[in-house]
Image 1 (tube, rainbow, N blue to C red):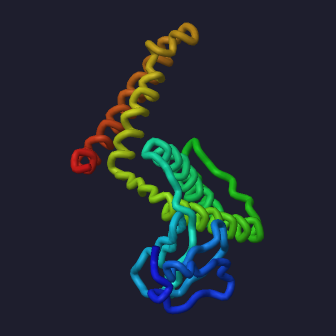
Image 2 (image 1 turned 180 degrees about the vertical axis):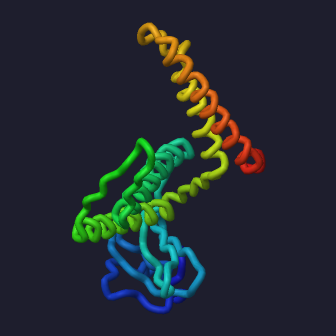
Image 3 (image 1 turned 135 degrees about the horizontal axis):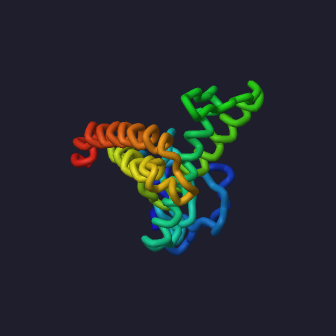
Length: 205
């Protein structure tokens, strides 16, 4: 509990009582309040927590009980959502890939792009609030490791193109085998080179 004298001012919207026995503030549970107090503090009132934000405003929130397993589960879900938002933001900003066998067709209108960016922003505000209130960790992705992982996985995928594997789908003509096997070998060599390029980043974490 904190003595009322330690606060500069109490917002007019406060729904609370001053405990005459101890001269302490006792907020009504669930009250939507804003207190203005000294900087750099987290003030607690019973089961209420007031965390300092910009402008030296202490915002009220319930102290939330959560175990580490629950925290990891929530963080995992929100990390996946956050990663997806990054992709959606790219599309809203005009991403349209034209590669060899993979292309994207981005026909979003200006209005759709604007609305998408606005909604993505609202989702991130909510996630940022949850991160702070639940003290969720930030997941940092090592790009080198990610490239290495994708390249390693696709070595198995490319190997499926070899004639010995294609026989599972029917008789492979000699001409097709002579064409595919060298090409598959070249692709595998390229992927192995990619893994070696980022190998240092992978080893260094």
